[in-house]
Length: 149
Image 1 (cartoon, rainbow, N blue to C red):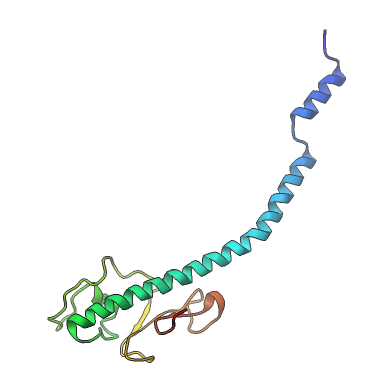
Image 2 (tube, rainbow, N blue to C red):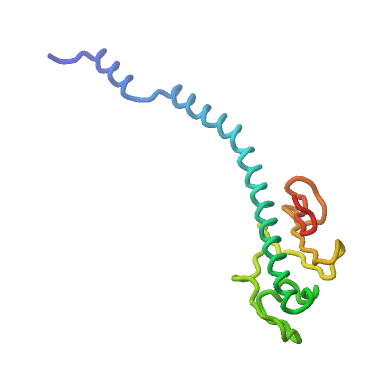
């Protein structure tokens, strides 16, 4: 027995996805992305600030070992590079004090190093945040060595 053309249409309709069903699925996905994406981006920014804080803490630990060996911190001119390569006229240097090259901050810019620092007896290390400018709030806030966040 042959199926009638009416039965064939019903079978085709059940087997495929209609345009309305597809639009409903795309709308649900778009709504989900609109709600979740801003939260995920916020977490990415928080992760970058946390990574900068961790790197600065690592620098401060290495600088402490440098000072134990040499009696002082590297000057601003020597910079953080003194943790990797022996500066001239520093015979007590016993480094390298970091296992890898000096990284850039999570936003792709070099850290700012100053010694003597303006905030106590230790060096100042600064990442200027997402905008790369001093100051700022939120993701643009500076990550600095003299404040615990």
